[in-house]
Image 1 (tube, rainbow, N blue to C red):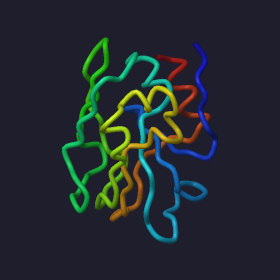
Image 2: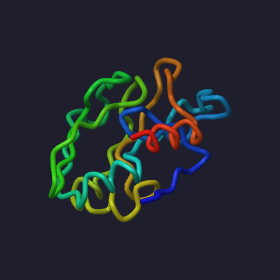
Image 3: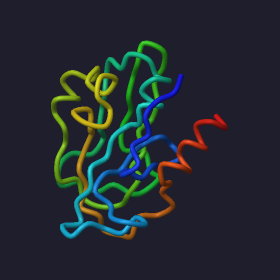
Length: 136
């Protein structure tokens, strides 16, 4: 199945996306980015029935570290933060109704917002992410 990979986003090898980074991964003016799970990951998981984020607003996340888990009808998978910083917002709508992630992973299905505290690491652009999922 071919899933969409929006060009304006950056991606982690663990299948999270980051919105709000500028060209070549530069940080935005307000240093706040939005994080979610890719459509590829949501499709592979199946219907998502539960989401738990281990860090709340004001908490710190580290790039590459587990910050939550998502449970589907098929399996349980860790959620990794693709960037380091402070959580500024949690999408309570997806905590209450996790299926939103399956329905709209790049829109209403976002997970949290982060005020970046360090330069983003090795995030992939859309071409590199498409190659990663093709190689599976």
